[in-house]
Image (cartoon, rainbow, N blue to C red; front, top):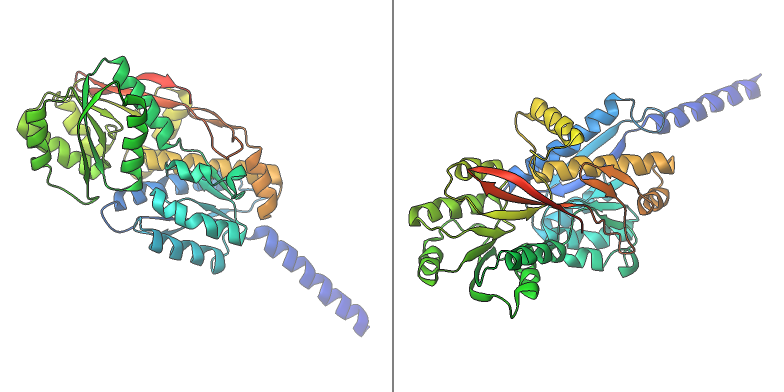
Length: 377
């Protein structure tokens, strides 16, 4: 009788253990700026990821009802802080999958941890070419990237400058991996064909551009190639207005950011254009649905970082469903074979685990930012 009772107890314990595993949350974690001058981008990262997770959970979750849990840690966009977050996510939180940080230097610092811990990492925003160079056949089999590289975007932007027939260009960029890689990639296209009047690299928290604008007014370049993030661009554009310049901003200025929406509408920047990964007004049924849900939930249109994380969570969810498991190796292999119907086209990964999605060309026309072209990579 005691033996039967013991067997019964052990059987119940085994069943409860299995049920517990099946019901456990699927943890997806990532570092991002919660504090600091890029905190508003981190907020959109979190919103995009949580919106995707909420939609998936509301539709029944994954693997027989398991819910996705989003865990974000504050990296301040600094490599050391980002590494600390990822170490905690893997060792303490035991996340099943990682996403990359927003800043390339931080993501590059995190990649060895993903490899060491054997966790799939999907990079959806960082754009430095070295991320892909080091992934897949480059040596790190655990890292995948959906965002285009600076080299890809810079080459497209450079061709745009040539197509418009500009003879001279001035560069202004933040002094980060992002800014320097962007300038370098555009220069490779423009070298020997367009005169570069000046190149200025600014601190990531710089707010005063008066000395740069004074020089640009005297140099009179035909275009200003910009690699600044949203808050810096806002300050630059406000001071540009004070100088009453009439030089188009080109390259990769985030003209679709809500921070500069009123400046765009002023008409002072007509003819300025950008090559960017996303615009909330992109006219497609899938995007209209996404933007509507985002605005209803958060009261704002999605920033690119929100869009990128939203799609990233959905891509990870599809990989987990395909793998039929959260086993890291099975999810990694499922990601490698991804065919995901993105808002901007199908996403698949090459040998370096780099996706080649479409990129939007946008131009300010009569105070409105409009998509004027869709370019395949």
